[in-house]
Length: 380
Image (cartoon, rainbow, N blue to C red):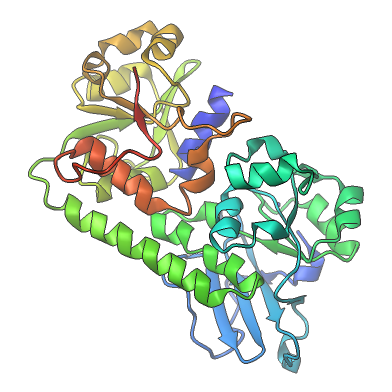
């Protein structure tokens, strides 16, 4: 469990379908001449026209060699002949199955959580609002993301399945498409910038005919994020920070170009591995981490540990770090859903403004004196 939570954080920073008409990215041309409404997300494009929209997902998984194009058709909308070859989805959709907890906040923010009819492994969902629908048997368990229950999915017959995949081996989604279901890949998790991840709310908005609402929500998040970033620039010093924790004989920590590292940079903190190249996690020895981080000011996101005692029980050598001695260790693990899911993994990609404010409040408390930490808490 600790490995899963740790690696999920680091990969954040806590699936080949024939009917989608895959296209090589290197030769793919813009489908139409409209203006792309996407500003930050690198793997998503959205072009709106009278009666329909064109959605292009160009990075559904890391190092993808193909992208996907979807046509979202409004009632009475006429699709040009040149776009007929692509998967067409009638919008607004009236029911949906999503496959990642990161999709849940977008549904709720757009007020369409009542359209959710299925989810794989519902125990991972933390939101009180959606958990109430699960408890009321309004959201069905549909198996695991890599092996969805085809029979249950066909019986639910959702207007769209919002899927995600770690690579091009997607037999489950291919089977669903052959059965007539519409699958749209969501690549939000491959984005490496906070606002890039958050902007995928516009995909959910487009599926439900709520483009304007999604645009407004994202603009508010962007405004709050950039304002917090500007506040952080007023700091007169850059406290030193390290992250991650040991799993077996290896310390896993975010690389310098990762999502997690960007937050620390934007909070005007000195992340000690900021110069490491890569967007995932680095595997480092305890000795190497200790040599660089022994005197660091803060230890942020030490896996899924929820107390100092848990940390020391796992590895008594952690006691040698000044951040632990000074009780400057902060974790997202204290905020969990009723079934144990981490709110951070679920909500943070959609609300990076809250993550950034947490970071600023931790490393520069004088800049946000009245702000209450949302995801992270000091370990006791």
